[in-house]
Every structure is written in C-alpha cells, then in structure tokens.
Amino acid sequence: MKKRQDKEKDFAELKADLEKVKNLFVAGYEKMRVSQDFELRKTVRGAGGTYKVIKNNIAELASRGTSSEKLFSNLKGMTSLVYTHNDPVALAKALTVYAKTNPAFVFKAGLVEGRAVDVKGINDLANLPAKEEIYAKLLYLIQAPAQRLVTAVNAVGRDLAVVIDQGVKENKFQQ
Image (cartoon, rainbow, N blue to C red; front, side, top):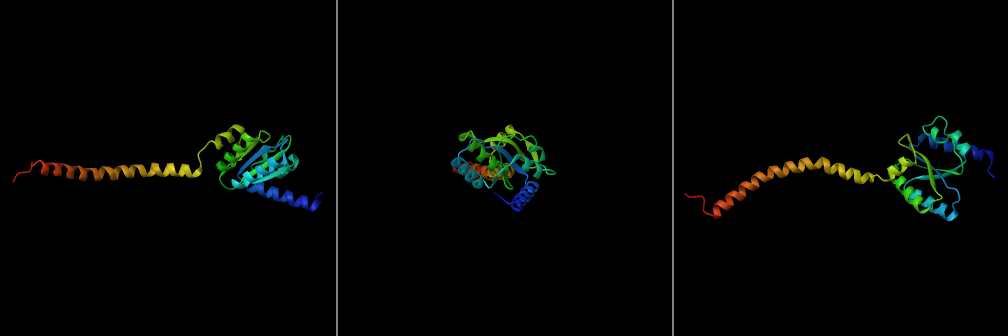
C-alpha cells in the first residue's frame, strides 16, 4: 500500500501533467488481461505517448482548473489516460488500431489541441493522414505554380528551336 506522501506526490505529478497537456484521450480498459495491457503500453510508447491508470475521483480533482476538466466529470468504470505533447494524430491512429483488435479498450472522451472531442472525433482524427504526408502535399501545392511557370518559359525557347531545326532540315531557309 502506498504511503500518503507517495499518493500526494503522484497527485501533484498528475495535476502538473494535466495542466500542460493539450492532447489527451480518456479510455476504459475493463476486462483487459495483463498481456493486453502490456501490449497497449508498448503501443502508446511507440506512438510517443504516456499511459496512466487512474481513479475517477482523483482524475476529477486533479483536472480542476485545467482545460481537461470537462472530460472527467461523471466518469464511471475503470479509466486510463493516454496523452502526448507531440502529434495527436499518430497516437489516435495507434490507439484506434489497438482498439480494433482489443474490444476491451474503449474511448470515453478526448482533448485535442485544448478542445474536447467525442469518440467520433477521435476516430475522425485517426483517419487523417500523417503530419509528414500533409506537409508533403502542401509543399507540392506550393511548388506546382512555380514548376508550371518554369515549364512554360522553357517551352517557348524549346518550341522555337524545334521550328528552326525543322526548317533547316526541310531547306526552308534560302539564301
């Protein structure tokens, strides 16, 4: 059994994490086996997140005055927190894939960039392309007009050279 000092220290750490975090998923894990929990923790770490099992009343107390406060009111059942300071899309994708193979893991609510989202919003987030893919598409769109301009400018000289070459071959230029 934990000592009171250890409990207070854990509570303070949870409160500090909830004050800083902008991307948070609240999930239920009822009837999960130890091996499933181990695999979940490995999946979360691989996606750059942190996984904690908490008591509902402690989570509600720790979240007071934070942007995640509305997520922890009226929680029932076993609850866990999954949060990240990095890319929420990668974590949502990893958790959604895990939830499909392990029906004991269910989403309850989420917080993305400081805004509360429901379960449907979490699934929509998981269906987004990765950040790198979005950057690549954006870069392509930015480069496309410049690339077309260069092609058009080069086409004039190239076309002129082709016309002159054909004229020379067909002896169209007389002296």
